[in-house]
Amino acid sequence: MKKERNEVENVFTNPLKHNCRCEKLLKSVQSLPWLFPHCFQRYRELMKSLSRTVCLAILATTASFAALLPQAIGQETALKQPFHPEMFNDQNLVAWCIVPFDSQKRNPEQRAQMLDQLGIKKLAYDYRAEHVASFEEEITTMKKHGIEMTAWWFPTVLNDEAKLILSLIKKHQIHPQLWVTGGGDPAMNQEQTKAFIESEVKRIREIALAAQEAGCKVALYNHGGWYGEPDNQIRLIQAIDLPNVGIVYNLHHAHHQLDQLESNLKKIRPFLLAINLNGMETKGDQVGKKILPIGQGDRDKEVLKLIGQLDFKGPVGILNHTDLDAMTRLKENLDGLKQLTQELKP
Image 1 (cartoon, rainbow, N blue to C red):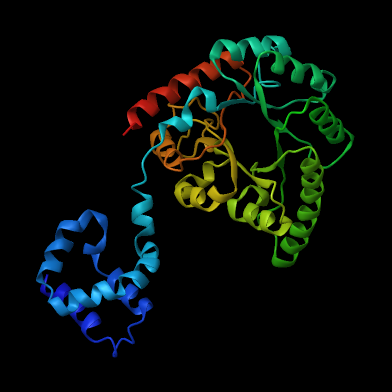
Image 2 (cartoon, rainbow, N blue to C red):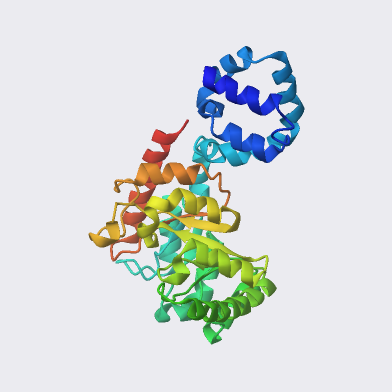
């Protein structure tokens, strides 16, 4: 305590020596562990031992120091953000990867009935060539059942298929997010990366402008490669510079990022349009456990807690992405999510 008191006395009673700069004050106080929330009792004891002159000096610098304080304690505070279980309420959940991924090969009506039974009111629509002919039927059927078309797996370029989707979106006045993926070799050199970014910006910007006319947002979909890294997606979004471009973050394509999940979530939070959950096992993609029901991964509780601390208001996806019955896998995800949410509730 004596050492700490002397250090604070020094910085606050010698303002000329330290030029009374907030940066200097911040640097000095950052080094003192008693500042952080879990040490308030120690902090109070120290303050009682300070002289009246020093206390007045601290008060005089509070306004300036307060503006810089989050830099010192931001990480500590972030770890203590409350968990928001309402993020995972049924009405906010989106069924994903249930059209081509479904052993029952349901048609639009059967799919809508399945979602009704599960209490899921949002669909992220993926498809294959055989589903193109039933695009409009999918839209009208989901509307009839009161199910929102929250997102649409979108072509990577503005081709005829993409234009067909946009025309139906306009016709039926729905506004799904358009999930657009990409690739790129992570080992590209600087010159190759620059050329790739220019090409990607041009490609995605064309889609985003067309989406804007339809009242839709474009979400960059991580699916591996250079494009699948959060830092690179942010670079693209900033270069595209359009208000309707963001990120959909997919846990099942982020096993290699699991140890950096907390920092990645902080980075992408300002751009986040949707997040898709998955059971997360350490190195799961390397041991045949890339896709797991929520609650069956050894990292699930940790992962869900971090996501729940985001207080994200957008859609949260649960997926099948297997050759199993989509209803069975969605039910497993709902049950696992409910159990973990209950355990994490404050």
